[in-house]
Amino acid sequence: MTSSLPAEPAIAADAPLLFFDSGVGGLTVLDAARALLPDAPIVYAADFAGLPYGEKSEAEIAARVPALLGRLVERYRPRLITIACNTASTIALPQVRAALDLPIVGTVPAIKPASEQSRSRVIAVLGTEATVRQPYVTNLAREFASDATILRFGAPELVRAAEMKLRGEVPDPAIFDRAVAGLVSQERAVAIDTVVLACTHFPLVQDELARAFGRPVTFVHGAEGIARRIAYLTRGQSFVGNGLRFVATGPAGDIVPYKPVLEARGFTSFDTL
Ligand code: DGL
Image (cartoon, rainbow, N blue to C red):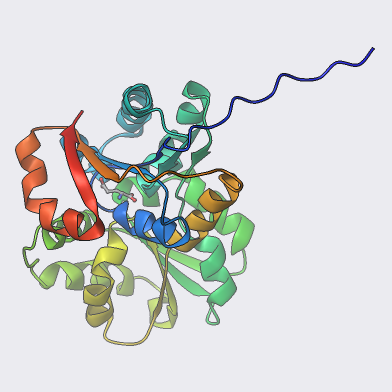
């Protein structure tokens, strides 16, 4: 006798891809994903009420992120979730995967591609304070860059600077100088040739960081790799455009200063969770 497995229920063509970050940093991942999947319906969720994650404890993040994602799944029924946040991914991916029966794509420091590029074998990892202290980072370094020196620095001010920039404000240039100083004051820093932007907010201020370095370094982040992973996991699925929706925790008024950059990206609907 033969038996066959029940067919997988078809994924609704209007089921969105859900992107999640503490703030607007995950837009750097969204931009890369939209370049590959321009027709995908999108929900972008920003946990403004919880920002910044980089200054929270592991326990807070591990409890908060799966709970919020659970509420977002109930409301939006996404086909896939991208945690577009290194801090949340390096801490809470196991809890999220255990709680939700959906494909979950995480964002982790791009040490592997950085190692493939670095010639000097001195690689900097610039992230939030919570990310740079994670064993996850040590394990990535051990697995993909065991012959390299990895210099880490947690720069929470850069998160605030990136958020300011997207609100149309001009961050104090001293913020970028301080972030770079945190790296270049470390032993062997003179040989840094590659800088991992291990926070999704940081590519938003890459030009300012490059200026503060004052010498050529290569910046590496994971957005394109994550976009390829999302495209692979959704291969063969149909997408019916349902627009771009933005949802944030906290008061609705907190979204207002970001509307110009969000509308320029094609967001048409704004909501709170
Ligand atoms: N965008 C987040 C990341 O990639 C963190 C920002 C925050 O501190 O909330 O780590």
